[in-house]
Structure formats: C-alpha cells, structure tokens
Length: 202
Image (tube, rainbow, N blue to C red; front, side, top):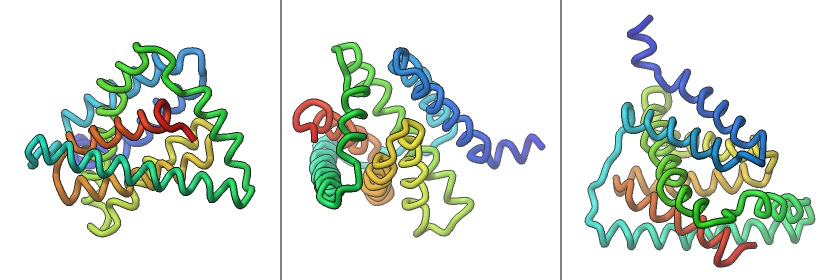
C-alpha cells in the first residue's frame, strides 16, 4: 500500500488540490488568506515531489517569459471579445470575476508575486504535468494538465475561466516541456496577471 501511495501521488494529491481551491473560492472575504494557504501547501508538494528545471540563462528566461505573457494576453483578449461578439454572457461574469479577485493592495500583489504565481507553476507544471507522464502518452500530457489547471477556475463559478485557464496551461505547459525553465513560466504567469488585473483589464 505504501509503495502504491508513493508511486501514485497524483491520484490523491490532485483531489486535495481541488479541495483547497474550493475552500479558497468559497468565502470571498478570506480569499487571499485561503488561496495563499492553499498555494503554500501545493508549492511544498511540488518542491518535495516535483521535477523543477532551470536550463536557460536568466536573460533567456526573461525573454521567453515576456513573449509568452504577451501571447497569452492576446489570446485571452481575443477570446473574450469573440465571446462578447457571440453574446454568450461572458462579459458580466468576467467583470464580476475581475472585480472580486483583482489584487486590492500591495499585500495582495506581494502574495501574488512570491507565493500564488510561483506556487501554481511549481504545482501544475512542475508536479502535475510531470506526474501525468506515467499514465498517459507524452503528446497528451500538456493538454490534459492544461485542462486540469483550467478546471480550477470553474470552482470560482467562472465558466469562461475554464477555457482561459486551459489556454494559459497549454502555452505554459508547452514552454516548460520545450525549454525546461521554471523561472520563464513564473515570469510569464506573473506578467499575465499584471496585464489582466492592472495594466490592461478587459
């Protein structure tokens, strides 16, 4: 039994992760505390059991991170306006989501920068994506990990977020498989959050 649990950590850690996300999104008044708590736990799991790579020079990590952030923002921007054009009701839900979860203080930004974004990348790309390789063919690992990441936003009752999170997960997952640079992912993810929440919100 112990050998099984050691080998198949993903099978029980993934439900725990969704449970932690659900707790964080359940009470908006304590969201930042619970979300930070959840990501600290998941970050610890990733550091203990994940595969964290850094195989690029610092300047290349920044270059790829900036490029990936710009690409992801453009895709999300285009997707948002496409849904708006089709009239499928994403405008109100996106506005509500941004109003509720946009960082409201320097404290929130610091949590985002040093815990939330690194924690999500370490867990979803460094742990989940790597663990999936023992269950599915290599070419399906990134898409499956991306969908699993996208589903976290469904727990916030933000259905367009499933597609947004999946698109982001595809780009970041592919980048990690090709370039093996966790710093590039963290830079890309953080810049994307800054663009969406602060600089150019939809």
